[in-house]
Length: 286
Ligand SMILES: NCCCN[C@H]1CC[C@H](N)CC1
Image (cartoon, rainbow, N blue to C red; front, top):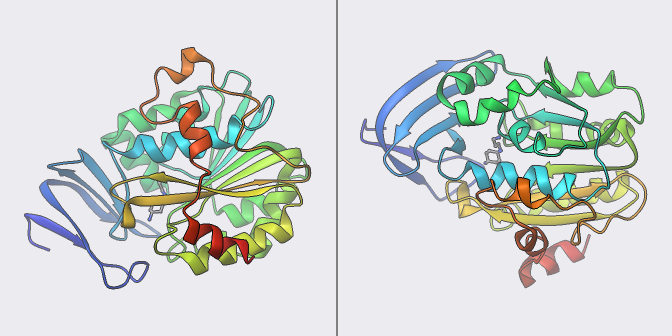
């Protein structure tokens, strides 16, 4: 890696690489779990990378954080108790806080260094931790959910990194069973679900597990995040028991909240579930 340009190659996207011109390296240390890197880029503002995988940039984080939070919370009548798995940068917390019905937000992030680094370098994301409804648990989500009573949360958002580091347990069936158990009746899960261009098999595996574990609806949605591999990232929206019409949200954001968003709006919400034909074919066979 020259000081000028950082190149990203990874078994998650073999055969291709991504590069960014670096203005300045701001932080680069190994935590208990992963290498934590922050740098100022020329074209996307500050960047957070974990084990050399871009997690977020100041320029395009809005697309991911707004979608993962509002696709789920706008789909249930009045979310009160919400759990975030991962998301230690605080961006998803910032979005959840826009829902006035929410009374409490638990967040379970395994790596304290991610939280500290976000507070130091990404104040516009770490602002999510300032909300008084937020309760932070620095813990392994597998353990946290095993200790969570049944029927606790209206919504669970899994804002995880890729399943090749500390997050690899978060795509297994036993884990999804603890998620379903922790959801209240009518509760929903929104899970980071990788790229439709790169990870068909991973998405099929997750979809097949979710179809077994969640008895209501399971829908794949996607958004555009230019600094993620293939420029697209998906979400799996699942409801615990009854069907949920994820495409036509029952609890749309009021104009007062939506006007502050940079990416999400009601048309984008519905459009996110429109899938290219090759994806429909690949997922239909599940
Ligand atoms: N809250 C930060 C987003 C974390 N989500 C992941 C980042 C890395 C991507 N390859 C997959 C999504």
